[in-house]
Length: 437
Image (cartoon, rainbow, N blue to C red; front, side, top):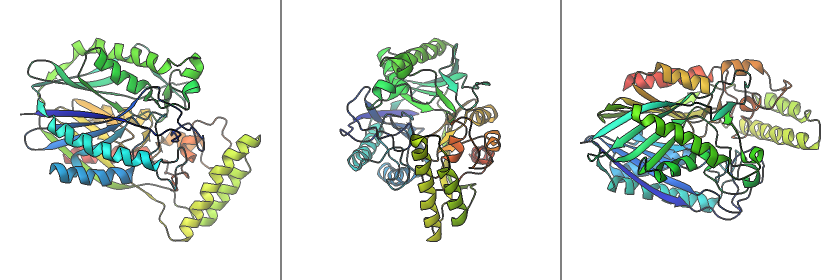
């Protein structure tokens, strides 16, 4: 008998906790709540193996926290830790979970981090206790009449995610306990007048609307490959506070219209695999890092730009110091695949560009594949080879920020830049994991 359990806790964000997103040292201190944030847990049990997905309305997950809490959950539920995944929605209006000594897009609030950890452990146990029989699963891909997002790196080609991949878990009485929905668009609609308010952005609003419309008792949004995909509009452009909700209503309309077209399948057996991999980086000497820092300090047409590039240069100086002290600034992250019957979930620890994400989907062996990013860690942007070749050196003059930023913002977590083959590397690794299931 296949079972699914769901649980949630609303996350309380301390007043003036710094919100994560929109660049480094943005100083976005929380002044209130526009859309609440949630920590949710979803458990899946096939009678032999259990998989658990921990969901958070946050910008990123954190490698260290995920590994720490995965071990605790696995111990408490007596399960294999490789079956536990952590996902974030990528709202840019939630507190940071990244290291306090590294990424400065938002300084971690210690009280919130402790609250979040306690919430994770609590919802994991509650989801386990909430497990009940699932008789059938229906899955499909809802086409979008109008894209939710736009491609910020290559606006002329404007490749975006063409569909909402979804999966409904139904009880024996036909009611939908859970719908998983997967799409790729940054959570940056709730900006402008909401820049200092907590918000789950359009993704959280979509989850809420799904429940309010009776589509499912619980909704699990899984962020797709959106490293180069911005929301189509935002509150600053709309000059109101409704952009996130507007996009969510549009999104849920497309999703709801496609539910009648789903394929019915049995829940199936659960299998999973996780591997910690060293990602390919461009290793540099302290002298090379400092030269790159000097190159950035020479940039800027005004005081504001010079300050921005100076902050980036300072991180490079810090990296040089760490290398001199013998620290290894390579990148190790966890890649994971979870299969449930005809569905397969590829968990990627960063912001994968949309085109390699679609390639993974197109070549997956499962009938219903899902690419889930911002999962199990914060690996930053995974850019295409084409994008990397466009800016071969940090000294290149970027005619625009996007495209350059995703490649050369690597210094903030104090690790080396990825090589241009980072996406082929990820694709090959997840395909290897898939074959091992």
